[in-house]
Image (cartoon, each protein chain N blue to C red):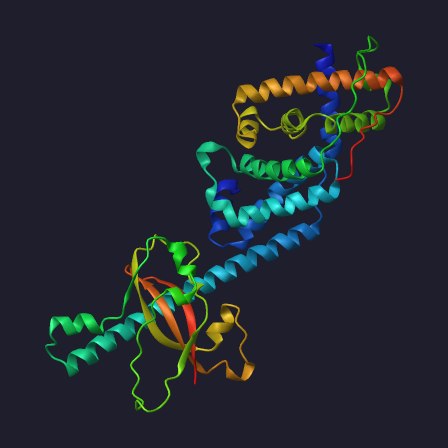
Length: 190
Length: 188
């Protein structure tokens, strides 16, 4: 029988290393990808992953089942660490070009690799409040409830930020297709 | 609508592209080491705390037994006078106050009065509990412990003297928990 995240966390807090390791291996990928997709930096993603689990070791006792899943708790820690770094090294927002009434299907107009990289840069150029909603719900496949717990806001706010984030992405990517150039994110190195 | 569907599809493609990404193995090594350090320290603190509480309780029992033997029915005033001073501290953070502000237990000295009195030198208090219940009252108990105990709280000790006995003051709460320890030496 597979232990739940909560059971593993309880055992880890009692000092059982195997439980902690199992929980780490189960959740580190999601935390790492979340930090990477939020910052675009593998070095920052590595640091955030490490600090998230160190925080779990120290403050895991604060986890409250009523407020969300262990996964959401970890995203919440990672999110705070990411936002702290973004405050220190803000990402310059991508300039939004005018709407283009061209082909709707982006994937038909770009090679797969180019389109994926352009989407990645467009996501990184979103303001953090919209970016975190898009990253959690669309890229991490979190439920609205988990995203709300991680972002510490109501589910309705998550839906609205997600919708606005997607709309901003559409505008940004249409512009990229229109001008036929790669999206320049102007992202400072973190 | 179609635009939103397109962007969701594009995001899905990005999610699939990143699906296999994971933190490097060195991160796992680091967090597991941190986990071991954290729990080793906790186990040690809990063990030391209980040992000191037991030692302190034994000393109290022996002290009270000897006193009763010497003074079968001491007057009440005298009993109060011989009790070690109690610490009335409202905030557990105050345990960290430098020892100079905490009244030390009076040590009876058997040496003749003509000899110079040795000066007592104490370290700061080292907490013995990770999470302690609120501290209201307690007592300072003078005990002897192996010098190796000092090393466990991070104080330097000569390898050859680890087995030597050293004096220590243990702060014991009214509930019986040993909360903090400081070490004592004497200078002429």
